[in-house]
Image (cartoon, rainbow, N blue to C red; front, side, top):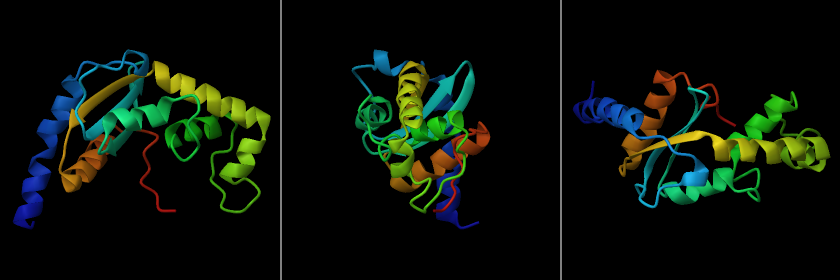
Length: 155
């Protein structure tokens, strides 16, 4: 293994442990002190669901959870809404597209409910400023915790 890559990989598990040791909070109880950049984890009823990474944790959590967030800003909530409405496969045709789905009042309601659900979930964060380690850590955490809403699929 390339030495530089090995060093990045070896740095992942301690950050993973730090994430798991983070005291969980909800969006409604967002701490005043948060790391600037790093990894965040959404969990519900003791089940780890979604891992994300960002260079601005506070702003990214707001995008995920804010009632007025769009489908582009709140992809996890949009995925939960798809699941709730049994529209699990994305479509890149006009019929079934994100814009088309949001025209359906039942889907729009499910999306609104999903954002409310995210606001009540437990959130954990860990700081990671290096963009390469941030990307590796997101994958490491998602794979290690078997986060069902991280798929790393190409579009």
